[in-house]
Length: 309
Picture (cartoon, rainbow, N blue to C red):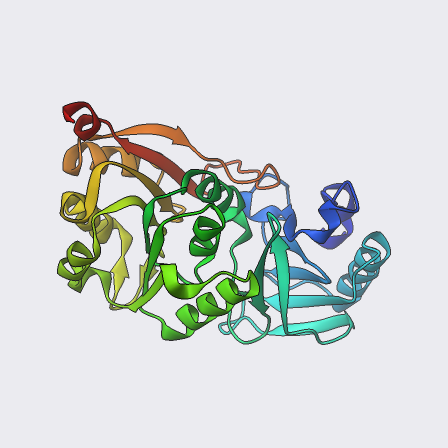
């Protein structure tokens, strides 16, 4: 029996027409919680249903499952398949139109999506609750967004009435999409800065830009020649006092499957003991994890400096 034939009973479809308008993951097999399905994810990026495979499946089964998605999602105009087991992660159109560039909604904010041009679409859906948290906690704050990618956190912060946001990333292309994302939401760029920088060579510049009230740090696990998270996360923690304001808050994210929340907690206790862990922010419920290898998001608060003042 094909793995895809087991999927319909596990899919979490939007329950209401309003929810159908929002981008979301429908199935998360990568959490190893569903036998035989660890190589499959399904995302709803209205009006596109995106199937991602990390191992091959028979074409005949893919087409049957694509037809099921079309019948289950009334507004679906395209079903696309990404082969993540291939180096470039190519995408095939299985049903409907070849929709490649479009905008989606999440928390009623808009984000630009590009399918077929790179392995990633432009927005990581597992960070949904992190972006929602930022929108709810950024009012009047000076925000520093490290490893900003396409600036989803920045859009959420401005929507939450942040005073300012500085986005830092090494990819000018990603930052350009970030500008597009702000414009999609009719947000003025006067409060937003985009810095193409190597963070680990730019702490002095961050100090000049600061101090900041809210830090968002969402680094890649590994990028050859630029980021090795095991070695580099502590470097950021050690320098927090250089660019963060007294009483500041941190949203520290970790995507490395082999590392747990204890990695962040241990290094924060060693390098920035004035910050206390307040809360762990869980991804949406669809991201079921049997081995605790998924995304971790921890909220820290500078308690000591707040008390001193």
